[in-house]
Image (cartoon, each protein chain N blue to C red):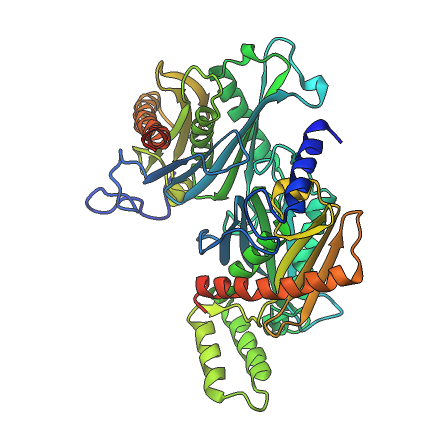
Amino acid sequence: MKPDIKLFDSDGKRLDGRKPDELREIKIEVGVLHRAEGSCYLEWGGNKAIAAVYGPREAIPRHTQNPLRAIINARYNMAAFSVEDRKRPGPDRRSREISKVISEALAKIVLTERFPRASIDVNIEILEAEAGTRCAGLTAAGVALADAGIPIRDIPVACAAGKIENQVVLDLGKDEDNHGDADLPIAISPRTNEILLMQMDGHLTLDEFDTALELAMKGCHIVSDLQKKAILKKYQNIEEV
Amino acid sequence: MTITPLIKHDYLAKLAERGKRADGREFNEFRNIEIETNIISKAEGSARVKIGNTQVVVGIKMDVGEPYSDSPESGVMTTAAELIPLASPDFEAGPPRENAIELARVVDRGIRESGVIELDKLCIEPEEKVWIVFIDIHIIDYDGNLFDAASLAALAALMTAKVPSNRLNDDETNSYEKQLEKLYSIPGVDEAIIKKQIESLKNEDFPLPLKEPPISCTSVKYNNVIVMDASLDEEEIAEARLTVATDENGDIRAMQKGLSGSFDVEEIKKVIKTSIDNGKKIREILYKNVGK
């Protein structure tokens, strides 16, 4: 595939001036909502996401209850004004699929067996979207789960790698996503490096895949440090008061 | 009624008898109001409003579309509100229910019927093309008084919105310029103003044409007291609710009574009076934050 715009400049820098293995700027705030059990506001480049956790509470309707464990009910939703052309409110096929894979990713790290018949609801709102919203949303959800005090094995974190102009790069921006050759978003449990979510579209050779996966993992660990710093910041401040 | 609201009710009622509210406010006092604008760069206009712990985000998107056949030279506005489950443990996912629809319609009415958006200045080509203004209200955190928070956020977003005239092709731009010239060329309007408006259209920072907005203030009644800007606890035990939108002259521009309780005429008049007083204060906060 030949890109129709140049994605690297003569110095090998990307459109937004990043190096191939550089993340966009990330800002994480913990506990931004007062109603939710736990919440997180996250900016990742041009993406703005809020995650809120409710529960564990009785799963409704009752037929969704699992007698052995809690169900994780993640709901990814994009605001109508989050994208260039107004999006019709409500879930579409894309957001339902993302909700499903995020729910499944989170179910692995939450100690769901502690809360039979309950649901843990993770609401992810994308206020502004610019490539990589599922990674931003899942990363925010991980922080919100921790903020809610839900028993988890680890704080899940997500990051994508991709291929543009035959080079593997970290964390695709908007134009890179549109004109690039491949996108590989993953979510991991950073303590064990277990992969909780993986999607891929485009075209990668086996070698490129290895490089991309390694790079995405590296990105996940950088973001994971930012998550932990943000959580510590909130709870350390309280200690000082 | 479950047991918790009963306890809350007794507590708030006892406080009310002593002229007090749970958070120490006066009966006619608003919580702290914060307004932040231009928070979503993909939207034509946007704002986040906090009233106490209640938090609302509004985004304005604009698109070119067809006018309604009964108003061929007028732009179109639509308002939608979502009570997303992020904001409260009681909000459920799914299509808007009656509460969300009432909220969107009350906000819509306050803006539409008072003519805040000069829709005639959003006509690009009569009967063919007009600007459509989408006002999307996103409730982020729910601690009572969504009506005022949503209205205020919608106004702040509209007042900082820019018409994306760079999306028009040359024909459309010409047609739109003619249309605006016609509208601004009423006797008494300075020619320099017309020129400036048309120029800003070409410079792609054409502000949404707006008039002075009315400010909405909502009161609720419980245990025979009336309080302004109810918190969630107060709203849960409220018997009746009244929203009054007033303009800069202190005239009434929109009203909505809600819930199954009632007000007597004296009470209504009192509510209107406090709505005008609070409206003035909120207007100042709004203007300060949108740089007017």
